[in-house]
Length: 164
Image 1 (spheres, rainbow, N blue to C red):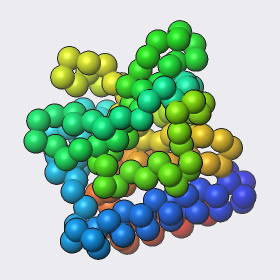
Image 2 (cartoon, rainbow, N blue to C red):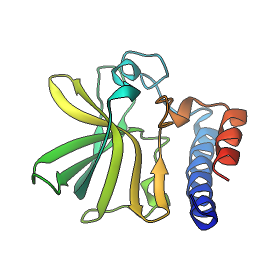
Image 3 (spheres, rainbow, N blue to C red):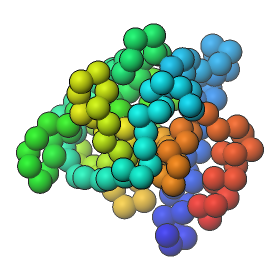
Image 4 (cartoon, rainbow, N blue to C red):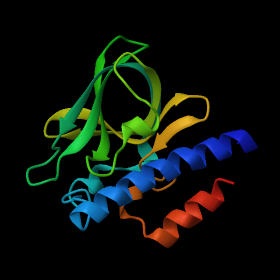
């Protein structure tokens, strides 16, 4: 990753983190019920099954992958290869800030994550969504699938430094 990409990555990550911190300050703590590391939903994420594809954003949706979970953010993408509609899970609504990268319907993105069958539907549990060169939002560590919303401030700081 060249220096400019690292700087842009850190800026996007910083904006996303600040947005989630602001929400946390308003409500006392972000609502990530059911999205926790090691929880029932998180166990569907198998980093060994990593995949990526490009698609066009057809819709930005609210999701509740399993009963009792906090609302989340998802995307409906039209896969560029086979023109099939795919659902992508990003993370808890109080954490995922798509405005940080200006994501909107009609954008073409590259999604990295893992395929999972949740509630009888094949979905992609995203680790990151890349809009343009250097413009992306990360929601999980690619190497092990740890959700960003479950990292401590120290762990987030280490991730930022590792991107330098």
